[in-house]
Image (cartoon, rainbow, N blue to C red; front, top):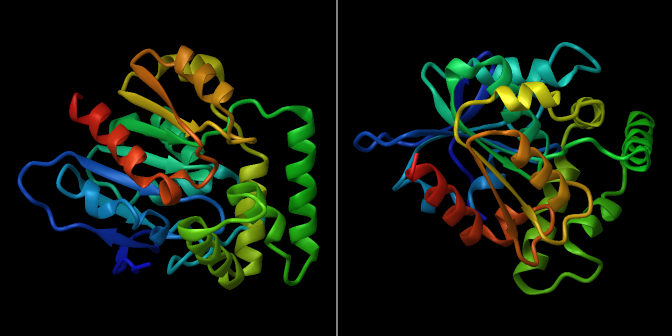
Length: 264
C-alpha cells in the first residue's frame, strides 16, 4: 500500500493536498481512530479526477502532533481539522472522522459544502457504550494492547486474500500508533455521539450516509435514522461490507461519493 506525501497544512495538522486541476469541488477526507491519512489511499486515485482533495492526519495520528489536552473531547479534533480549510469542502469522515464531519456541518457550516458520513455512530446502545468505555479504560492502563479483537470486528476471524492484506496493514498502523494519542482519540470517540436531532435537522448541505451491511457497531439502522433527520440526504448500505469499507470495498465507496456529490 502506497504512502501519501504529507506537508504541514494548518494548526499543526499534517496531510496531503492534491494538485488542483480545473474547477473541481473540494473534498476533505478524515480517517478514524488509530489510522492515518493513508487509510484513504485505496480510493484517492479514483477520487482525484472528480475532487480537489485534502487528506489529513488527525491530531496525534500519522505526522500530526498530539493535542495538548490529555483526554480531549471531539470538538478539539474538529477545530484543528477545520483550520486546514480556507474555503468550503465536502467533508468526508470515517468512524470518528464521521462524527467530526457531522460536528463540522453543525459548527462550521460556512466551511461545509457537503458531508459524507462513513460508518457513523448515532445513539449507541447502553451495551455498546459500556463496551467502548471499558475499552478506553484498558487503553489507559495497557502499555501495548493487543489489536486482535479490533481487527476481528473489522475483518472477521480468518481473513484471506486482499482482506488479509488490509488486515495486516491495519495491524501495522495500530502497532505503530502512539499509545497515549490512541487512548486520547478513543476517549473522544467513546464519549461522542452524532449531534442532537434538532441540529441534524438543521443541516442544509447535501449529505450522504454510508455504512456496511455487516457493520455491527456503526449499523445500517444508525445511518438510516440520520438520513431521515437530515433534509438533503441519501443512505447507501454496501453489501457484504464491514467497518473498514473504504479499504475492502473501495470501488463501491468511490462510486457512491462521486454519484452523490457530482449531482450537487
